[in-house]
Image (tube, rainbow, N blue to C red; front, side):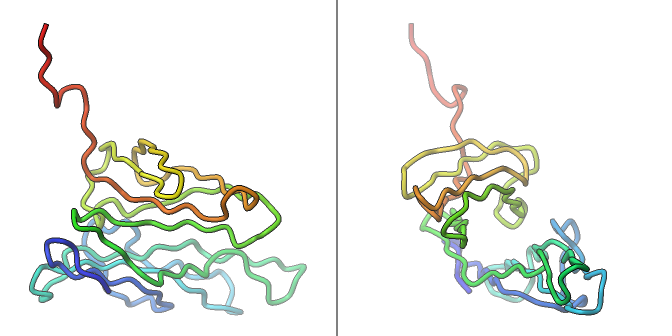
Length: 174
């Protein structure tokens, strides 16, 4: 659990329950049930409360359904999403960490963000500031790609910047 600059508590974790409370308009309103009964799987969740902690402002599951490989009994690919911590800076910007746990292979994938939970509007452009390299990326929408090469860096740490300035934000003088 963490508190945003506005003192609104944010809780993250994981659940394998289909009855976890979500809010209307949630990014993922229901648990991704596995198609087999071998392993129930886990979905991460993000829940943000109001400043007093008395009401959920936003709550969603974050996870993919498990895919079972029948040629390898007991194997599962996906369906084990975990959220261990949430970090918010002094300006209510959330820190997102993406890691490649394979020390030998470059891995690419899609990062799906719950925009409403982050205080972002659907269709708005926002900045992902990579804190290790200093690179800045403009993302739009809930899903964007990342590539992690363990020879360069097995992890990327992003600060989600809510407000991106455009040329309309400046006065021009001729």
